[in-house]
Image (cartoon, rainbow, N blue to C red; front, side, top):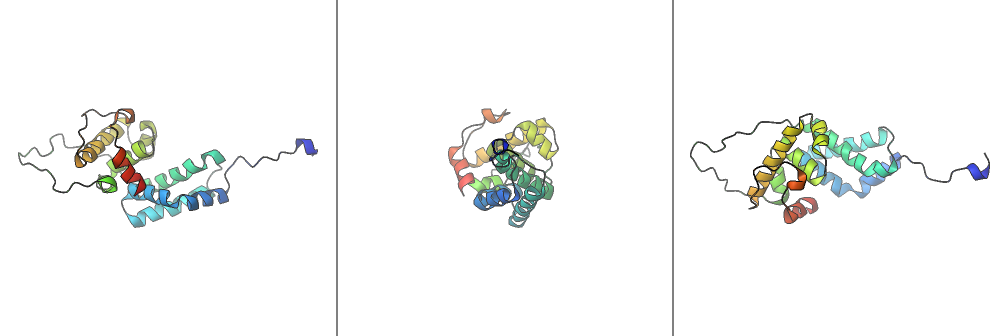
Length: 189
């Protein structure tokens, strides 16, 4: 081939070395993501290891997408390990007339880990990872309405635990209150 026609650009697809580098450089962030989803250190480790294996041995991915692909591989493995399912909320919690105010109010990462599995997955995916309701519903094999309801419950629980007052009809990430200190605690712990 003539020299003028040879391409000197790097391959457009991420290599297994690219994924290994991503997992090495972002170890803390990827483990935190996995732990927030699974709420279990062993399962979190398993999701990260399987995510690396899936990324290295999986379908070719454009280099520009490698970081998000690695995170998605971990998320998919966490979903397989935990199988979070939607459970309809009790429409009348504490309705027996007794004040059931919990004495323990977790903050930061503990508040997220205290959520029920489905609500925790929805919170992490939609709020922290910025997945759309549609993407969440596909990953979690549920309806968008269930995602919206679970996010609302998660925000109410986390907001209540942290002294925030939330609107009853939170239905989209753009309408969620600003939680700078909570999110900083979750993301940087």
